[in-house]
Length: 312
Image (cartoon, rainbow, N blue to C red; front, side, top):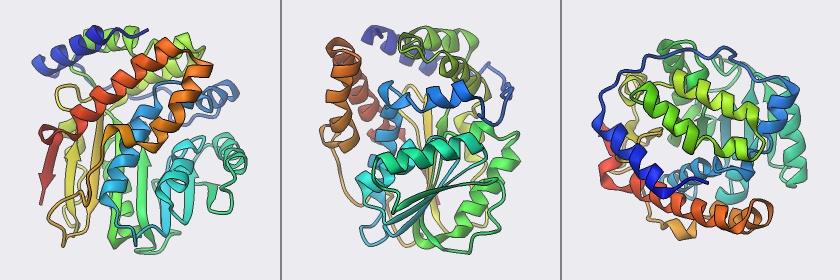
């Protein structure tokens, strides 16, 4: 279990510390191992979908209803987030791209199981090169939890520049990734409390991958530098106030004064509403109640005005 006080302790330490932890690139840039892929496919029964729920709400609030025809999801992994885009945001056609063939295969099977394969497809591809895609062909282009896999910030910048190119002028460019914490001790505490949830669920490989991801993640300040200087979009960066364990970089139409077009509440998130009863059955009522509290705190910290940074 994750005591809420432990979560608050992490917030305070991260807020009051200077950045001391240097980046350590991941040992493996592509997930292809059978057991690793299998465990990532079970990630929806962990607390990880909280980040998906936050992303879905952000996109739903920022994407016009008449711009929900085509989408691209880069580094799509087992396809859970890609499928959520179709199910909860009513996108008509979505293509997920991933370099790992086993991930593409299991994502395709997941789309079949969720009965969305008529709208959702997956292909093996190198997301650092989107030259096979036309300018402005997507209404939405997502890149979730893949930036830390890139070897350097210049590669991340190239991916963002390509996302900007293939997304039409009225569409949305959306990046979500982790944040490198301020020190080794904060990282260790996070792994022992929040990250230990994966061990409790038997997801040992993901536990190790999470540690590697945190060490390889970019800081909020580093990520800000990948915004294309020649982009015509407005850009903003959002991080949960006080505890930026995740970060969001969004490019939205230049004729808009604000990222968000509509409001939302934590209680109305469709993914969380769907997962709560499933979590109770498969993980337990106490765990689920605690997860609901963490969801509410995460939602409040992210959508507070203090977590929002806009760039012209």
